[in-house]
Image 1 (cartoon, helix red, strand yellow):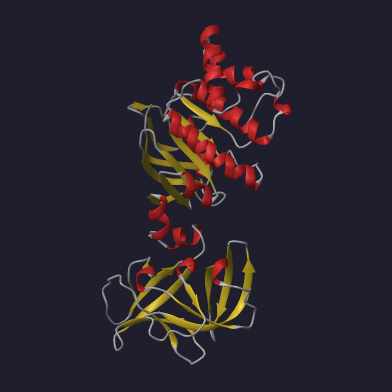
Image 2 (cartoon, rainbow, N blue to C red):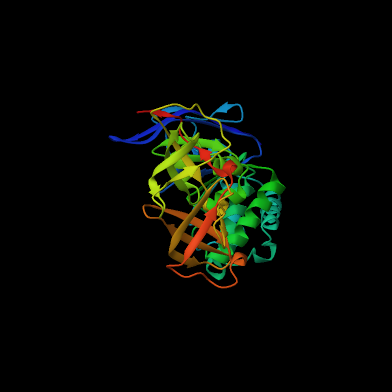
Length: 365
């Protein structure tokens, strides 16, 4: 097996800069996801790792080898494409055996490798079927088996689950993670699906505007995002541009005004330098907000507003609480409401000081 190291990768397409000085290390046996919006450079970076695209600048290492100038077949990488790219005229067995035939493996070894790979994806009994006789999930598993049959050092996955329906996609996420753990192979998954990356990955690299915005565990990138881009891309978020009110030793949010004419005030446990003419960007996740039946003035952070939106999604509700100026998004458990609240109702919300997270460093005005 082997880890991956990228050093100062940049990629130009004419005047367009797709990747800007990207450096990262993926550990041996790690499941690493590249997450970002469409057009941010995820697939470009994956193709550079796989050898399908030469970087404009930078170096690619797999294990201890510099593979920057090597073609794909000399890199010991297995690739699974979004479209699966199965050969429609070949059986499942022959599809999985294709890479081994290119490597000119002996028939006995080839048969053993193919059946071992099909066993990993639980399709041994499907060896003689044609691709059109398989479901989308089965075709996806054949593509994974084909990639694993050549015993690569690295498995590269380019949005392999995006063509599946929601339920099958969930099932395949579990299967994919189990296969990766059983084989112990270094894996890079490219996806724009935040939940997929959070549930599958040991670590995640957030790509935006051709740059790595943050690398961390799913918990780190969700709870402690580096900047506004990461906070807004991963899940939903309330962002507050706040100023320090020295007279009351608190942070006020000028763009949020309650019905009593008071600005929303934020109390937080995080320590930041305080002083006049300082502004801060803070984050509050909607699910960290509690809904109560009455105003809790004793609570350090409390706001009263009116429901502007109520969206029921089964296990939870997405609420938009409108103030006299501005609003706050709330995700509340379905169990918190014996009956659904209605638009126009008055609602009381509060949150803990430790749930208010500073994003950007202070800005002097």
